[in-house]
Image (cartoon, rainbow, N blue to C red; front, side, top):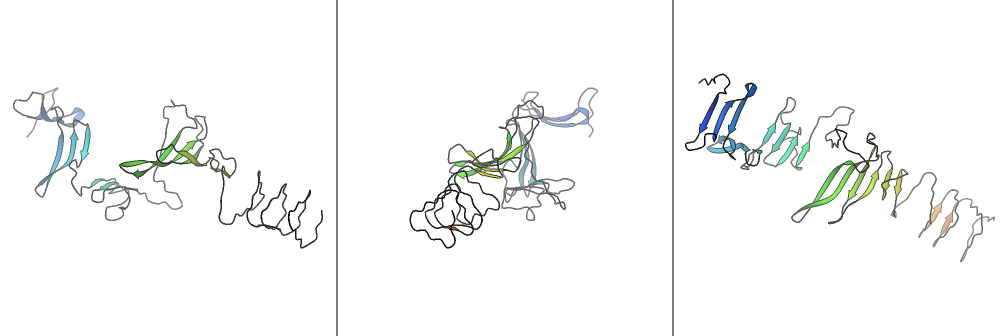
Length: 294
């Protein structure tokens, strides 16, 4: 059958129900520039594509007119998979309807595609190179925004609670310059209490300095607050203490030390020469195993 329109007209097949308005129909028609259109002219009526599976009609695709939405498997049939293939990957995007997982170049279901995570992204390795799997990108393409240290790209983690979930933590690639063209950035780690505002707990700045309790560390490691350890603290190099050093156990030191004030509630042991630039006050017994000069 040949359908050929007159000059200036479109060739079409129209499906029209009796007693309906003239423009309430379904059309298969020639589109512009040699295209082809499937049109449902009836207001708020959908278009569906169905196939028969063993005697049962299965709706594969639904073009929802009322919600302006395209749906695959709109009737939520069980074990319904979805796949997009490319020239390099048969399963470039694969939704496994049995295990309800999504794979992006992550392999075939039942094989390489993991089922213990909701989503897996895969990419082949290149010898001697880091494989970049995911990019989170914040942009100002038209240069209309005044970029400051308040800008950044964030990864958010929501934890489950009754009847839903709530924000529990986030990691932010935080700008550390108020100059629009300067992209120096650090990494900020935030945590949140229950139903409370969060705060940044740790920062790695653009130079690699680490701050705990501060967003502007000035040393390789800077901690604002109390540090507690249950094992050995080993320092190679000079140690500067700007306040009081309190020790509840034994202090043992094998080299030279310079102190303004020493206070100890237990044994003070020094192996090597000790030079005191002022008086040594001892309350209680003092035992010296070698020569004392002062």
